[in-house]
Amino acid sequence: MRASQFFMPTLREAPAEAELPSHQLLLRGGFIRKLAAGVYTYLPLGWRVIRKIEQIVREESDRIGGIELFMPALVPEELLDETGRSKLDILFKLKDRHQRPFTLGFTHEEVITDIVRHTVSSYRQMPLLLYQIQTKFRDEPRPRGGVIRAREFIMYDGYSFDTDEQALETMYQKVRRAYTRMFQRMGLRTLIVDAEAGAIGGGSNEEFMILADSGEDKVLQCDKSGYAANAERCELPDPKLTPPPIDDVPPMQKVDTPNARTVEEVCAFLNTTPDRLVKTLLMRVDGKPVAALVRGDRELNPYKLMRAAGGESVEMMDAETIQHLTNAPVGFAGPVGLPPEVPIYADYELRGLQDFITGANAPDAHLIHVCWGRDFPEPIWADLRVAQAGDPSPRHPEGVLREVRGIEVGHIFQLGTKYSQAMGAMFTDADGTQKPIIMGCYGLGVSRCLAAVVEAHHDEDGIRFPITVAPFEVILILVNPEDAEQRAAAERLYAELLALGVEVLYDDRDERSGVKFKDADLIGIPLQVVVGRAVKDHQVELRLRTDKNPERLPLDHAAQAIAERIQAMKAALQPTEEV
Ligand code: ATP
Ligand code: MG
Figure: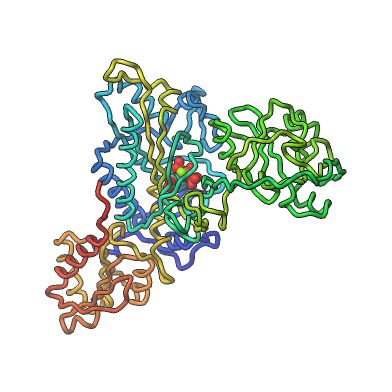
């Protein structure tokens, strides 16, 4: 490709709103352009990278027996009614001319399950792994970082269908290894972490994170074992605390705390510290009221409560019900005197705490000198609080959790029968019995990977693409287009490289050489070949984007040497993991 005939509108400066390096560089380098919040065009350079990422993802999926299809972006809303997901506020919704409700696909579990329930009926048709690479639409509350969190984005989504849990486990591990290979091939080093299933639901699931300080996700990593988890999911061990004696604790007492609702306000008012306070959170698990207790300086992890209570959904209780249950406005709930049908769960840590402060279930009042087992029944102990850096590891007795930031590039789930049950996707097993199909689903953010690659590979001058996903393998820089000898050499080398199948961007533009070098560094093509003054000695210069020491190559052998160099660079990114 001749740069003079290409379309690569670079910008001198990135718009002020771009904070992440990847966002700035992709805008400046002319890879993406914003149309609206979270809605981007992939300009030619960006699109070439996207196509390479897609190709890697395709090849690795096909290697493990995946079969590609393409589902519609336009999805009838009634299909999502079958699983209850039509209520999600992340959905873009629209109506057709007959006022029939549609959504724009945000992920395709329902669509694929609909296909499979009408086509797969026998154990002989499984295992089956179907996948697509499609545009997804999500009305994200906070689009961010350019294509990292967009509202329209490209995703790889795979779905597996198996006859039993064992087969699902085998499939899941295969996909997991394929993902590892995909990211290795893109030059991304990923950490696999335990994760929360979110709106997808189902059983065990893991995320692939690339570590970056700018990452939105908080990951906690044990310093002694291999355990790593999204902070949303991270387990904590039961510290098995001994309850302090309560013989000397004065009787529970109600005190007025006018307008003091928050932990800070109550502590200021009662002149105490948050670790002497117990927060009572009224929640609903599968619609039923549940109370959760955590120390005043801790956060409740609602999903931990959901699992402790054996439920599948969790939400905060509405203010009206709270008022009804506690006879007080929100902010004064406590465990003492709750109706017996509301089970009380408490974080493990509270087993070591007595003589604490709680809400009084009365307006503007709190209770002091409260003891569990005395003033209210011993609660159900569970791991309920959000884990944080410095907490003990759940996997090693001496391990401590450390925090790193990550960007989630992939997420794989063992769904089990959540969708097949809800939508009636059944099969006849070898013994003749009817069973729900066992499913898995696998998502990978193709467009997010464009940003992730840049986040992982850049310096102050621009992007440093790994060769496997670079928009071109080589940028051929003609230093002085006026110089007939230089131009002839560049044209010759360009033709030779093309003949060898090398992807070359030939910067033949009528620009100052300084501009060309700056642009070359910015757009990050891994090999820079400079045709300049050295042509007089029948030589060209080869520089790596990652190592500026130029190397001289004789013009006659340059094309061959460059092609070999490319092969070596590609080989270095070959995955080590087998499938
Ligand atoms: P997040 O927690 O980041 O909102 P998610 O867990 O809802 O994402 P999944 O449903 O697991 O996302 O989607 C699979 C993959 O698609 C993610 O791992 C991520 O790489 C990508 N992805 C998800 N949401 C977006 C988005 N808004 N923009 C770009 N890529 C996204
Ligand atoms: Mg996810």
